[in-house]
Image (cartoon, rainbow, N blue to C red):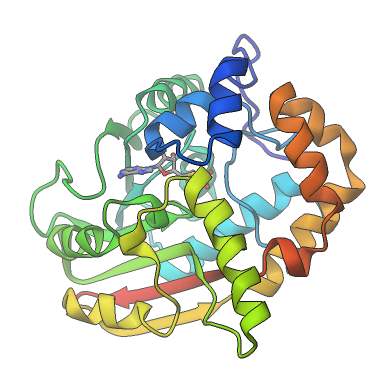
Length: 301
Ligand SMILES: C[S@@+](CC[C@H](N)C(=O)[O-])C[C@H]1O[C@@H](n2cnc3c(N)ncnc32)[C@H](O)[C@@H]1O
C-alpha cells in the first residue's frame, strides 16, 4: 500500500472529455504532445492508493502500487542517493517518488521538474500536505531547457519519462550541464526492442511500438534501441555508461496483474475501457512485442 494517498478532497479520475478520449485513442492522425496527454488523463492513475504513472518493477511485488514504488527505489538505489545529495527528478508526475525518496533515501534536497502544469499543481499540494516543502521543490519546466545553474546538482533521474522528451539526446546534454563532476544520471526508460530476425515478428514489433508511441507522444527522434542508447550518453560526455533491459520484470507481470484485476477498468475513462478490454485479452508477447524497458546509468566525469 502506498504511504502517499491522493488527498481526500482531490477529484481523482480522468480530466478529459469523451470527445477528447475518442480523438486521442481512435484518431490515427492525432498529434498530442505529452502535456496534452497528461492533461487528458488527469489524476486517472490506475494505482489503488497513490498516483504513480509508471509501469512498475515486478521482480518481487504483486501489486501495482508496490511495483511502482519498487521501480522508484530501483532508480534511487542505482543513482546511489545519499544524505549530501541534491537530486533533480525530471518528469515527476504527481511526485509520489519524491515523497517516497525523501523518507527512504533521505537526500538533502529534491528538485522536481515537470512540463505538465496540472500535475505540478496537484503534486505541490501533496508536498505541502506532507509538510515537506523545505525538502522538495517542484517546478514547472522542460527537461530540455532546465531552469538550473551549471554543475548545481548531484543526481539527475528520469523515472519513466525520458522517452517523451523532445529530444532525449537534448535532455542528456542538459543533464550533463547541470550535474556536478562525479554526478550521476539514471533513467528508467521505454524504448523499442532490437529488431527480430523474422519479418513477421518485425512487423508485430513495429505495430506494437507505433500503438504506444503514437498515443503517448514519443518523438521519432527517441526511437532507438538499447544497442544505440549508450552511444547517445557517451556523445553527451558521460562515462561509466550502463544500460540493461528489465523488460521481463515489467510488461509480462504487469499484464498478468491487470488481467487478474478487472476493477482497474473502473478507474479509467469509460471511452478508454473498450481498447483496455481488448488489450487485456491479448497475449503479453504480442501486445508488448516491440517494447523494451531499460535502466540506464552514467556519470559526469
Ligand atoms: C509516465 S509519467 C511518469 C511520472 C512519474 N515519474 C511516475 O513514475 O509516476 C511521465 C512524466 O513525464 C513528464 N514529462 C513529459 N515530457 C516532459 C518534458 N519535456 N519535461 C519535463 N517533464 C516531462 C510528464 O508530465 C509526466 O509527469
